[in-house]
Length: 292
Image (cartoon, rainbow, N blue to C red; front, side):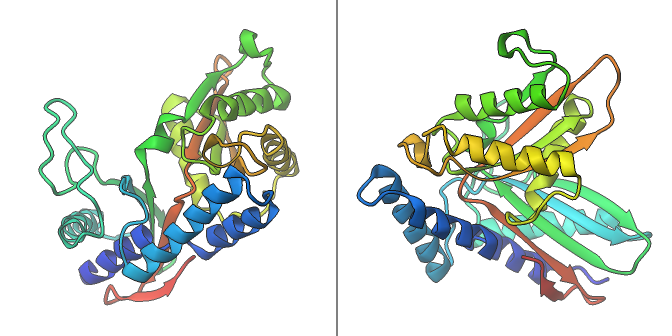
């Protein structure tokens, strides 16, 4: 495959400036549910207008264009090194064009070189398969919503949460309660039950690749997702913490094997600016189709 530089720049542009249709429809549906004349309705109207303007002007939806997370499904033999090099160049050019803000800084010095590239930035997750297809998904995850992510080690005495699904439920709802409006709600939760501290968080973020309306194929997790969503939206936190019926737009949960000594519940929080897009690439590196 030739280096898909132009394709990746367009993927970045569209991810930064355009909310996926499933997210947009969910926000519109939430707006219709909020009581007229309330702060919740006003906040959602501003969000909806923001989405429209960003798309029309092809400008970033939020001033924080976030951590840049690439998820690449590729065939055996795919040159991951070449892809990383091309993707980093695409990030630098997209930043220069204004599709990304200059958001990435050196953690030791605070220096910002204006490229959005450096140790660990952008982040890459490669997954090989035996087919010939290449798909690239991109998530731009803002720092505000990253700040209200949480990880619990069960049992948690303060929550009376044991090592079972009810204990997981209590931990997840506590994370929602602690977040309040600080994560730029209405939010979307990505959750992993199990794993270790690192893989739990990593797998929780892969849940953001799912569509909001989809249903979990595992009945127990599907029931938990629907219960958390319903209960959270009855807490009265609402958009931006202003009160209302829309605290969360969606809840996506997976489970991973764990060691008997550990039981982690890792919760990643995505803000309403749910920037997630993906493409398939043909043999020449050109975009075949859009995935969201």
